[in-house]
Each structure stands twice: as C-alpha cells, then as structure tokens.
Image 1 (cartoon, rainbow, N blue to C red):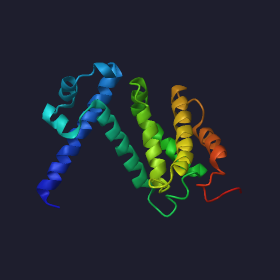
Image 2: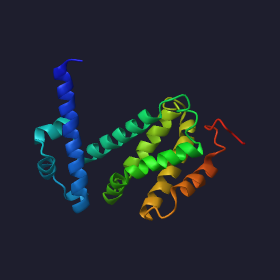
Image 3: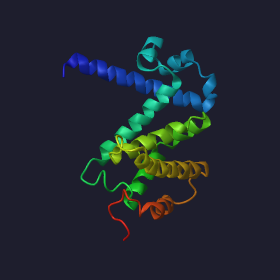
Image 4: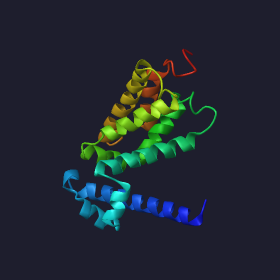
Length: 188
C-alpha cells in the first residue's frame, strides 16, 4: 500500500477515535441530546469538515464504535471453533468479559437511550458467527432470541453494578442455551 494512502487512513482513524472519545466524555457530563456538533468537534480537536467526512450524526458515531468492538472481538476469535463453539460456557464467559471491558460505552448508550445499538450489534454478531445472514427469517429469529437474552442479562448485570460473579452469570446463560441447535455439543 502506498505510504500516502496509509497516512490518510491512519489520520482518518485517529480523527474517528478522537471524535468517539470526545463524545463519550461529553456523554458523562451532558444530556446526549444537548451535545452539539460544534462542542463535540471542539472537544475532539477536529474540524467540522473532518466530523462530516466521517459521520452524519452522533448516533452514527456510536454505531461505528459498536462495529469496531465487534470487529475487534471476532478478530480475537478466529480459529477452527469460531463458528461452532459460540454457545459454550467458555465462549459465553469470554464474551461477557469482553463486554465488561466496554462497560463505560454501554452505560453511556443506556443513559442516552441508545442501548438498542448494543442489541443490534449482538444481533449482527450472531448472524455473522453462525453464517445465518442470508438464511430464512425463522433461523434468524432463533438467534435474535439468544442475542436478546444476552443483551438483557448483560444490561441488568451492569445496572446492578456487576455484583454477581461473572462465572455465575455465564453459567446461567449456558444452562439456557446448551441444547440449542447452534451448539454442536447437543444434549450431553
């Protein structure tokens, strides 16, 4: 890849990271609806042109960050069991630990009434990991059920300040999904 193209790509990613960080910082102190683009770009240290080159709304920033989180997670999981073992206890525990790493982001989504972004991200991840993107709606609904359960449990666990041990939460989820048709280790 040409050095100038790498530099442009690097600059674009840097600007996007600055914008996301600034938005999260502002969301801690202000109501989401009250955050202006001018305030956001000033806090991020980027121009309005840079903002509009990358995003068309504050929601698009939050969605882009969710995609970044999912991409990072799937990159960590590449391997032979990536698609078949996603409902094992170990994978569920790993995913909870990973989501916990982004607790601040998730709580900001909740505070801004945008937590459906997390749910849509989990839906997309489930469709991707099971290669169900181009399957029937009925097959997708089974995965939406699972991603909805993960979302709901994770959100309530966060709201309760994660008082319960993460291994216990993973066990509860695993006990409910271990006989799923997406799990290769059925009915053991």
